[in-house]
Amino acid sequence: MTEARYSFLSHLECSRTGARHDAGILQGLSSAGAPLLARYDLEAAARVFTPETIRDRPFDLWRYREVLPIRSPRHTVRLGEGGTPLTAAPRLGAAIGLSDLHIKDEGQNPTGSFKDRGLAMAVSSASQFGVTGVALPSAGNAGGAAAAYAARAGMECLVAVPTDCPKVNRVEAFVYGADVHLVDGLISDAGQLVARLAPERGLFDVSTLKEPFRIEGKKTMGYELFEQLGKLPDLIIYPTGGGTGLIGMWKAFAEMEALGWVGSERPRMIAVQAEGCAPIPKAFEEGAEESVMCEGAHTIAAGMRVPKALGDFLILEAVRESGGRAIAVSDAELMGDALRIASTEGIHACPEGGACLSALCRMIEAGEVEADETVVLFNTGTGAKYLEAFAME
Ligand SMILES: *Cc1c(COP(=O)(O)O)cnc(C)c1O
Image (cartoon, rainbow, N blue to C red):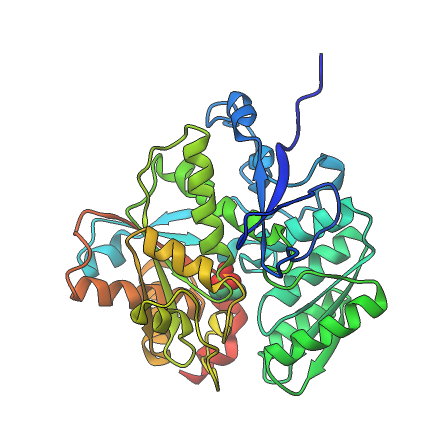
């Protein structure tokens, strides 16, 4: 008997030019300086990878291994990532006039946010290629997640953190043994430090979208939604920073269509940001293909504080193609709505999760949501990591 193929990864594709890149070597950005997207032999995968064939696998993100980039179980670095609950929210739904509202609770990932999905994949891939250390800038949850998976893989991890980032995020990276560098500046300054130190120290740069596989980890949220609902939802509301999750789920839906799991139907994708850092809503309103760097970006929802995303054009493309839109909400609204999710449904939402409810309420007021539509809010992390923010309320 021949061994079942673990991954159907075939090559990497430049998201701007479509140029093909070799998936057999460690890759960062494409030769055009754009994010690379993983491509699979979906025709072959479709024969063995179906909702039925994977039914009895453990409910974590590795159940989708055929459409993930790791070639052997030996190289998977695991802490129990993915497979988070999709919780029906009937009480909250009734209060805002919806009959089929759900919350995807990503706070239940190993380090308390969905960054684990992406970094599990990036670190597994790095380990597969024999990398001994990773580096990234982080002003929020990514640093802790990277540090945890690097520790698990026996790798070094360097995290560059702006001094004004929440204390918990610095502490957790430190706890997992990372080399934490405080940078007196913005996330972009931290990024420059990483770009300088990583090559010097032989570390692989796992910054958002600078390597191809964090998207692949995050896209598994799209597969999970389909399995948990038995269909795709009508509306997905997503708190957007670098956009990996939104771009990833949009990619997953296209893969699922190619695999024959779904038809051409798609959820409307709603990208939410905070008013103090809203480059995506601004570009959306202006009909622009790319965003403009947001100066003086500020919001308590650190995960959405990305002044200019490398993959902004991919976020805007997905939102537009889906018939969705981008919405900016205030910090007062999103904090209030995080508390509302916690007190009505028992899910300690993070500020970013609260922002999804704020955006949904705006859409309901504007008559953009039918009462019986299936709506999914993303609670991207646990509110327990934001004690300082909640204490200020
Ligand atoms: C990183 C982060 C986001 C933004 O995620 P992207 O996929 O990069 O847009 C949202 N919420 C939380 C809690 C985060 O840590």
